[in-house]
Amino acid sequence: MKAILIDPVAQTVTEVEHDESRSLESIYELIKADCFDVVTINDQRDGIYVDDEGLFEENLYIFEYDAPERLMQPLQLAGRGLILGCDDEGGRTIEATITVEEVLSRVRFRGLCHLA
Image 1: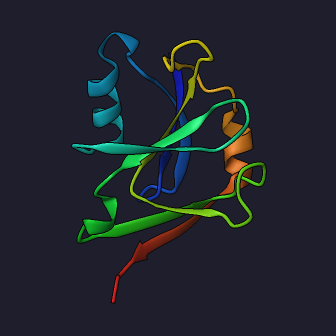
Image 2 (image 1 turned 180 degrees about the vertical axis):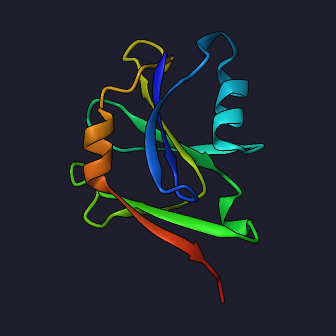
């Protein structure tokens, strides 16, 4: 199924394939993480999956995501982000409803950051 990958190291937003048959493993591989959290970004139930331990990385790459329907300020997220949708019936993962072009218009890459 279609998913959208935000890579703050390469500073790219690309459409990727998410393997629904091995959903969790596919998410872990795509975001390069061992555990994740999800932030809902719109009323269509799309969410960004991010490394739950991303803020503990030595090389911390940040991106901002502007989600005006949900928040007053842009989200600041660390590491790779994977956008997938969620169905209305049971919380199952579905294709993202947002497009790569929409994501590109909402993402700002902050590059390598160092926590003091």
